[in-house]
Image 1 (cartoon, chains in turn red, green):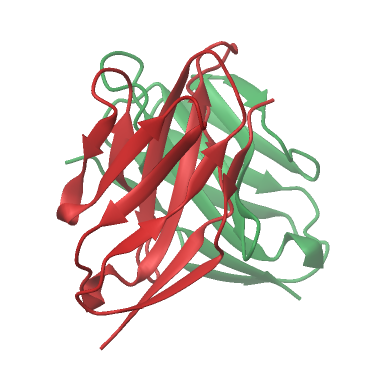
Image 2 (cartoon, chains in turn orange, purple):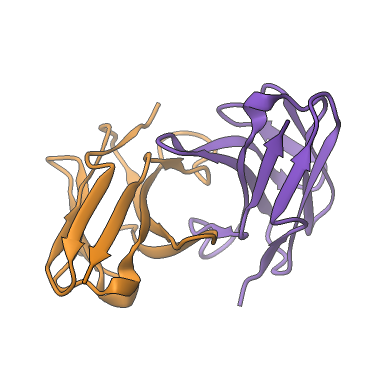
Length: 116
Length: 114
């Protein structure tokens, strides 16, 4: 079964600093990859997704992620964070080789705290 | 804009009570999901439904059941609530056709079982 590892449970950064949130998934032939964000007291919303094509994916709010098949990674980056980026970020994978590929497997989340 | 609504934001119940959590989506999506979110554990799939009256167990179905009598509505049922079911419950929906891979989430129901 597919699994997702988010290597950092908490990431504190200062405003305007760059940030990288790391995500690794267990090996599979074909996967779709996602990053979702959860702001305090809200549900999750999609930040970006990798389905195929270019390995660099751009999402909302200035975030981007790079799919690296050889390292089975999908790290999320932003060159300059804002206080409003404070949230919990979830990496998720959909395994296309398994039946029911509409199901997502989520990582445990990374809490990003942006300090002034 | 897709909208997924959940009947309550906060709920307090007693051990042994039967609890219903309701979820409604307005985009005619075929797929609907119930997740449980706990600190340090991320989201875990309880059940999902790919059509009316169709359901499939997720990773942690024990102690839960679901009902989908209408396409837009997916209910999570705790037959006899226990304190270890205190959690945040998130509902989501997704389409069957183009864009099937994107799930849309409701705001969540925070359930406290005393």
